Length: 128
Image (cartoon, rainbow, N blue to C red; front, top):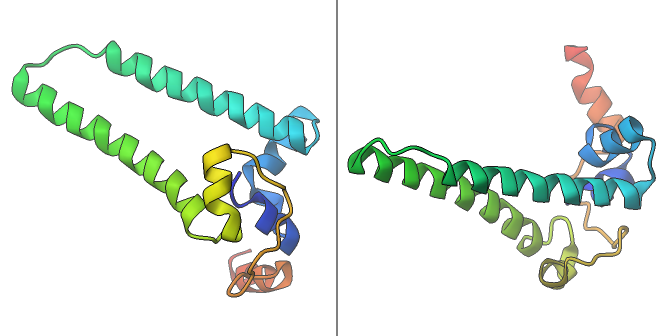
């Protein structure tokens, strides 16, 4: 979701999850974003429900399992936070978008260092 505006503006959104949802479910961009929102929310509920259903293997193992679960959460949360704070996807509006979860799809992007569709195709040609 975070990379969709950048990839779309560069002509390389063909592998993005939003594009996949659009094609799979025959929906427009807002509906694809909503679908992804619901899917993400459901995935979090499944994850948290699964944690509550875990058996106990004793204090030593339980502590290690709890640390592993915490680390998974830190990775997911950290990646989400990075997407808003790095300016890569939302520019200078990242903190506001992260706080409100409301964004204009096509913000002005700093595209320095990003590949164009043609550059990506040329780079992938030897592997085709």
